[in-house]
Length: 143
Image (cartoon, rainbow, N blue to C red; front, top):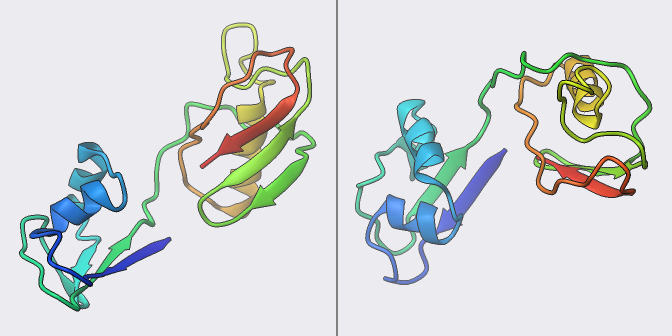
């Protein structure tokens, strides 16, 4: 995923200000972007404390391989409602847990998403945006 921001006013002084205010990025993600040289200012590698000026273009490249080996992949039918490069929305049936646990080590919705990610060759952590109880049926959001 590539995020882009063009400076249109003097509201921000540094790239870090933009990452925090416009994209609501955590310090942890900013550090990861910085360490992996995924921050560009006018198509050149940049640092978070670099100063910005009008019409500068900031690009953030979020394409990390992440470890998700702590979840056992399990083939299951996923009722995918929506999917793009940042989000996967699944209609969660009742009676299935969202997270692996002692009682649901290999039969949770996250196990099914891990199998799906593996089939796509996607090396991303499974981050559940909302958590539903096992017996609740609603949409589950992953990103």
